Length: 141
Image 1 (tube, rainbow, N blue to C red):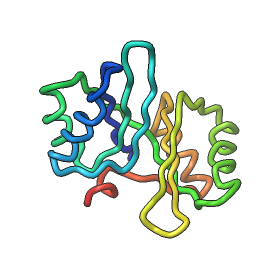
Image 2 (image 1 turned 45 degrees about the horizontal axis):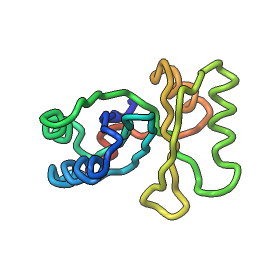
Image 3 (image 1 turned 30 degrees about the horizontal axis):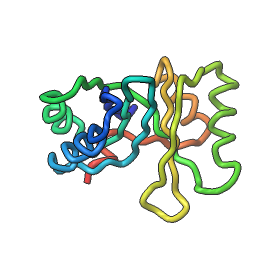
């Protein structure tokens, strides 16, 4: 099963990021991964958190929040580990819209978060190639 990524639209102003992260922390959730993309007047904070429902309920009081299913593929934390993931997806014509990575809790463990059009197909392709993926349940504390 794909994992749920939350996206927040933040004004490109001092204090916006610290407030958003403080709100997530105040909800008692752990941020497992985070990425920020910026435009002129705003930024998009994308995050994988341990309690998506609770975080979204708290954040929607202040921010425009969306949920997006994404795939988090496990890889070793070493050179060349990303290539087999990308190769398997490419060989099956799965286009990657964007991606970012984070380290896991085990030694030399990492994950790459992939935004694709069809997460179920991407996960099936990765599983067929022997590549593990995360689920929302696996992220809980």
